[in-house]
Image (cartoon, rainbow over all chains, first blue to last red; front, side, top):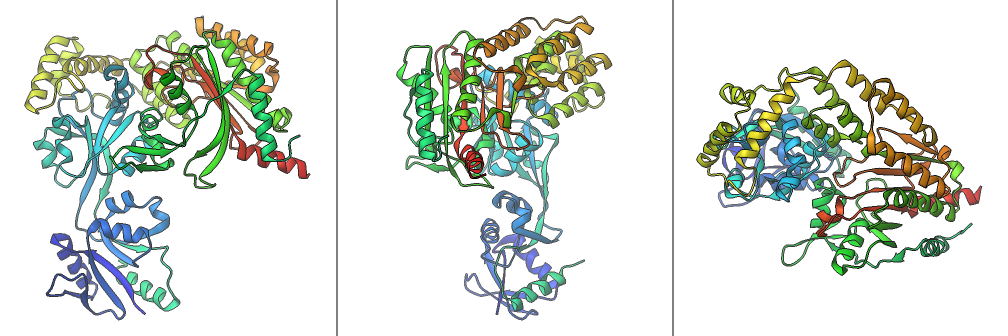
Amino acid sequence: MTITLAIPSKGRLMEKSVAALKDAGITVTAGETRSYRTQVEGFDGLEVLLLSASEIARELRDGAIDFGITGEDLIRETIPEADRTVGIVARLGFGHADVVVAVPEAWVDVQAMDDLGDVAGSFRARHGRRLRIATKYWRLTQSFFSRIHGIQSYRIVESLGATEGAPAAGSADIIVDITSTGSTLVANQLKILSDGVILKSEACLVRSLTRRRDAGDEQSCDDLAGRFAS
Amino acid sequence: MPATDQAMGEALDQLFATRGAAPAATPIILPAEPYLDTAGEALRRRIFLTRGEGGENLCLRPDFTIPVCMRHIAEGADLPRRYSYRGLVFRQRAGGPGEFVQAGIEDLGEENRATADARAVADALASLETCGISLDSLDVILGDQGLFEAVLRALGLPEGWQRRLIRTFGHDGQLRAALENLSRGPEGALGGVAPDLLDLARDREEGALTRLIRIRMEEAGLPLHSGRSPGEIAARLIEKVAVAEARLGEGPLQLLETFLAIDCPLGEAGDRLAELMGTVGLDLGRAMTAFQTRNLALQAANVDLAHVTYRAAFGRPIDYYTGLVFEAREKGAEDPLVGGGRYDRLMTILGADTPIPAVGFSLWLDRIASVSNSRVSI
C-alpha cells in the first residue's frame, strides 16, 4: 500500500517543496543518480516522485498520482473543470506569479478589459484579421476573455517561450503570460491592464479527487492532507 | 407521423426539395481556421481538433453553415441559391454524445431580406411539423439586432457606446453590466491615462498625440504597419475621453431598459415599439420598416404571428449575425430544436469578393427525435 506525491524535479521549486515537506515532518532525499525516485522518511507508505511541474499537472488530471506540488496556473490550464478533478490542500507560499493580460505601453487608450473589448471588436474591420494574443495559457485566456468579459473576437497564437517578445516581433498584438515581478514586461514596454490579472498563482499541494484508492490508501491520503491543514 | 429517424430524415429531404433547396455535400474533416476565425476561440474547446502532418489545424465538422458557404464561394455558383444539408456534426458536449445529426437550409444571395427571412422561419417550422412536432407545443422566439442598433442610433449615443453595447447584445448579464458602466459616468474610466495625453485628447490634438504614440512604438520596437497604428490609437483615445466625459442620462437609460424588456406576441410588437418610441418622439426609421415588412412576409408565408414571441433582448453575441435570429423549443425546455438567423457578414469574412446576404436555420434532429418519439409512445 503506497500513495504517491510528485514534486518538481529541479530548481528552487524543488528545494522549496522539499522544505515544505520537511516542515510537515517528511524528509525527502533525492538519489545520487538522476533518478526520479527518492528516499522518504517520516511518512509510511509515501512515495515521492520527481517530475516536471507541467507533467505533475497532467498526472493529477489523469488521476495517475495521489498528490502533486505544482503551480495553480498549470493546474487551471491543464485540467478542464479543475475543481471537480482535484482539490487544493494547501497554498504553500512560494512560487508566486500572476497570469496577466499585457498590452504595449504605446496603447495609451487601453487601460482595462473594456477598452480591449472595444479594440478587439473593431479589429477585423480595420486590419482584416482578428486581434492576436500570444500565450501558452489558451484555456485561462479563453475563459477570462470569453466567459468573464464577453470578448469573442480574438485569436490565440500559441507561444511556448519568450511570449513577451511577440508584439515587437509582430507575431501577436498582446500577450497573456505569467509574471512574478513584472520586470520582463516593463523591459519589453508592455503594461498590465488594471483588471487584467487572470490568476494569482502560487505553488500548491494538490490532491487528485478521481484516483481510485483502497480504504487504507484513502486513510493515508487524509493523513497526509491533515499534516498540511493550518 | 414518421416513426423512425430514417423516415424523418427522408421526409425532411423531400420537404427541402419542394422548398427549392438543393443538397450540398460537404466533407467531414475541415480546416479549423475558418471556425476559430468566425465563431471565435470560445469554440476551440467544443470542437474536435487535430493537427495535420504539416501542422495545419483540422476539425471534425462542427456545423454545416461554414462548409456550405465555403463550398459556394469556391464554386462561384449563381445567386440567389438555397442549399440544404443533413448529416453528422461533431461537438464536445458535457451532457450528450459528441456526434449528432443536423439538417437545415442556407439561403444565399436573396436581396429581398424580408422574403428570405420569412422563408427561413416558415421552412424551419414546417420542418418541425414534418418531424411530427405540433407547433402548439412550442415556444418560438424571434429577435432582431437591427432594431436594437436602431434604438441606439435614435437615442444619439456616442459611437463608442453604441459599439460597446452592440458587442454584448444577446448576452444579458454583460449588456446589463455595460449599461451600468455607461450610466455611472466618468469616474475611473480615465484612470491610468497620462495627464499630458489626457489634455491633448480633450483638445482633440490628434496630430500631436499621433506623434507621441509613434515615438513610443518606435522605442518599443513595435511594427508600425501590421497592427494598431499610432493614428488609430490617438483617434480612439480622443473618442474614449469624449465618451467617458459624457454620460447616459436617466431618460435614455430607462427607454433602453423598457425596450429590452419587450417580450410579446410578434403580431403586437409593431404597436408596442411604435408606442414606446412615440412617447419620446424618436423614429427607428429603416429598421422599423424592415421589421414590419418581414412580419408581412411571415404572414404571407403562413406563419401565425400570434404563435411567435418577439423578445427585444434576444440575440447572438457573435459578430457575423446581423439581423433576424430565431429559435423554437418545447414549451418550458431549454435546448432549442431549431435555431436560425441572418448572417450577412459571414460570406465576406470567408472570402467572398462582395457582400452576400445570407440567412439559414439548423435542426437538432436528435432532440427532435426524442421529443417526437416520446409523443408517439404516450
